[in-house]
Each structure stands twice: as structure tokens, then as C-alpha cells.
Image (cartoon, rainbow, N blue to C red):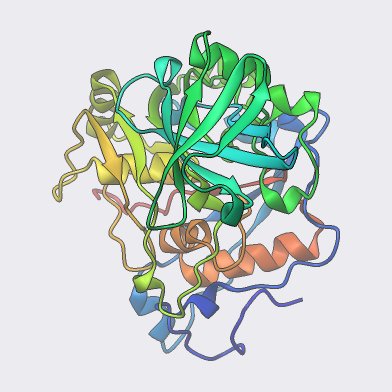
Length: 383
């Protein structure tokens, strides 16, 4: 079946959200992870022409030569001197089920602390609540004898500011009483296995409400094999917010706004990137969150700088990539900002043909699904 949302041979308008729509057959969403992290399938996609102009090409480029591997084959694609960049953000168990004084069951999803700083001591949070109409400021929800959530105020976007009332340290109480906020498309409650599997093996910095899913395929052994092959590993942090699951509703994608997400790029990572590029090595981003962190921290001339802050960077076709040479990612929702980022990097036509091939050959989709790697474009001599 075709993954293209427009007739073959036509020139898509890449500013239109519908250009990034596709139909996924029933049963192709991976509701549980593969038995082994690195046993998932890996679609290898050579990077194609990119930018707004490709939709107006008189002669479209040749279809990409795809390869079908498994994730444990990844070291064979990397070269000595390359650099693999990981997102160390850790998913917090921030889905809280509480009871109102009436006995009604309610849900609170903590998004981010109101005050900047470490989450372990955070008592006031921005949150989403359900049912929203019933949870007005002043309401109290009892999660357990150790934790009560107080609704303090409403926000313009429908969210809430909430306060945790607990005698314990907030992060320890959340680890004990909170639930892993699985993506809604899994259509199931979280289970004990999700505590481990909806988390990368290298997660260190708590703060995400969704996993940076491209990293879910790595094992400690695979990372060791990559390093043994002469590939460097560097780390950044970008805390993933709930907007990662939201489709773009506006017909013109440029009208869409991302939620703010916190990021940090350590000095040692900036130094490793600079040194890798100076010697001709390639930068491999593990996931769209790493792409947004690196591209957002880059100067127009390609200089990368250490730092931290918040980003709303929305990468879509037309973006000029300054840092990233290769991208490891999962298969994303239609009409999503993540799919637009992949199309911006790999090329729109290349991306949609890759999705068509993945659908046709039985790949599993979304957070617990299979992976795709967009390999570096060929460099001419002296480039």
C-alpha cells in the first residue's frame, strides 16, 4: 500500500500537514516491546534530497536502496571516529490516580516542576488532569495516605498548577506511588515490565513524561561493542513532554506550536562533537530529541556550544541541518511533528517510501516498535 497522502507523480506542498498523513493497517502498533531490546528490526535508509524544493523537482530522485537488518547489526553501520549522541533523560512515574472526597476516581499527569531545578524536591507542578471539568482549583485528590494532590490554579491551555502534599521526598514518593505514563495509542494500563522497558538502559536524569524511544533498543552490551569499534559516545538531556504524541491539527504545519521542553548540553559533549567533526567523523543522533537538542544549540556557522534552557524548536522540511549526519529513530505517528522532522532530515520522498516499505514488510510501529536509521549522505571528495 502507498504511504503517500497525495497521488503519485504530483508535487506535494510540504507546508501542508496532510502531506505527512499515512494509513497504518490494523494490528501494526507494537503494544509490547520485543523480547530482547536489540532484536527489533532495523530499516536502513540512505539519506535523500532534503528541503522544501524537493517537492517541486521535475524529475524525482531514484527510490532509496533500503536494507533490512536487526538493531544488533547497528555497529556495522558506524565507522571508527564517529560519535553517537544519546539522550539521558529518564521517564518519571508521574501518572497519579487519586480519589476525590466524593469517591470519584481522577487522574493527574505531572508535566514539569513550576520552579526550575531538580525534580526530587519539586512540590508544585504543571499538570494535566482528568476529568478536567470536575477538577477546579481547591479540589483535593487523595492518592494514598502518603500523598495528596491539591489543584491550585487553572492554566489558559486547560492544564493545572498542582501541589503535592507529602511528608516524604517527592521523587521517592512518586517512584513508589506513581505510574508510568504510557502513550495513549498502546490502549492498555502500565504493567510491571514497563518500569524497565519504557526506559533506556542509560537513562540518568529524571524529567520526561515520555521515553526517547529510539534509545529503547540499546543494551549495555551493544553500547560496549560500539565503543570497542572506536566510536565515541556522548550524552545530552532533553526532557520529553506530552506534545510528542499530539498530531498537528492545523492544516498549515507552520501554525503549530510545540510545548516547551528543557534541555542540557554538557561541555564534554560540545567538545566531543567539535573534535569529531574536525577529524571528519560523523555525528549520529539517537532520536529526534537529540536532533532538536544539537540543532538548537548550534550557531549558524555550525559551532556547537554547551548550555541549557528550554526549546520549542520545530524542525520541518526546509530546515538546514548544521550538526547531525545520521539519525536513529522509531516509526512515528501520521501528521506528527516527529514525522516532519524525519522528513526534513531524510528527505520527504525518501521518508514516505521508507514508511511504505516498512508497512509492506511487517515492521512494528511507534514507541515499542521497530527502528529506522537514516545513514549519512554520500560526501564528495574534499567536501
